[in-house]
Image (cartoon, rainbow, N blue to C red; front, side):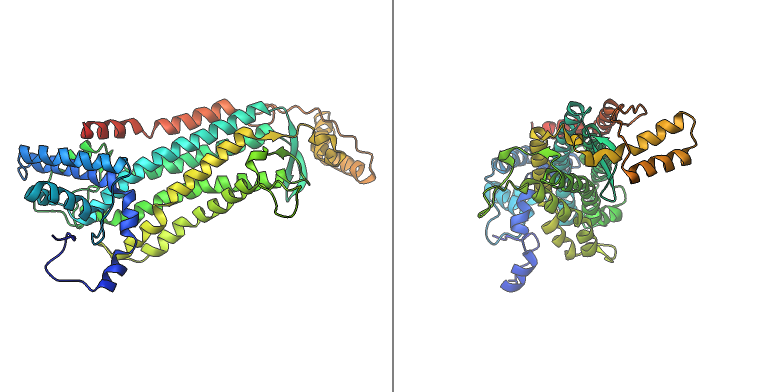
Length: 445
């Protein structure tokens, strides 16, 4: 029995086959349940235009649901000698149902099939990632509120600069994640368009009902132009990679701060013992390995858009096998991103802060601007006040007044965490994940 959808009765050189198949058998396992869902929608449409009978459709749908259940249970595998997930699904159907299994590929190509699989995979994984981003966001906001009155030094050029607070520090990363979520939402919405029916990139002579498959799979719309649908391969992954890189940038910066603030020279935060590791020769060590790995993995993720760009760069219109290589760097990226988000939320929830940082006199100069502002508010010209306080610091007579009063939006005394949370909620609500879940639930009934 043929194990390749394109087989024409001749054998391919074994070394060529190994090279061209690459890691598809391994990586296509990520796509297996989505290949089945796409096939279910496609054959439902084929029946509506007369290319399958109702009996054939019911028989195929029943078996595809069985294959889907095997995928979700982790029991699906691509057999040795089978080229990819598309071939394996069709082989299983043909093996079980005979010739009717060979009918499911009418009106489509592996080009639009893998595009569809990728988009369904992306939708599902972005939903998971967005949930984890929100979990970390909630932990950061909770910590911001818990420690909103605990002051800490703010830095510029790594020099003690002005008063900050743990409320500001935790809250800053929460708001950063909210902006990152906008990138994620944009990537999701661009991915949530149906390429099925574009076939090899030039449409089909069959009277396909593309609107029907769009609705069956819960897409917002279709990729209308069939050539552009094919051009979406690589571009879609790159857009998503930029969104993941934005989140990773926030995580990397947070991890760097945490490593710095945890070291003995700062002592601003305390990590729970179970979140640290030790040294093989130094018994006193409690290393912040979790944050160091988050930083390293996040920096790796920030390189993903460039990797994808370099693979697809300067390709003309149409499908090329180069695009297969993108799967190797793209599909596993979600697991790495999600692990970082889970670990960050876990450790942030258990982090404690030093509430007595400012007992150390070395931080007194950070209140200099407060004194300049007080003198200015009392009528002294700003530049004179600046010079007066500067001279007091130089000659050692400056007395820090730690009682500060910041009231404007986003300042120490007015964190606006409620407005940041509302901003995040509005972004999340615009994904409309429920539409996709309902469409897939109906398809699987």
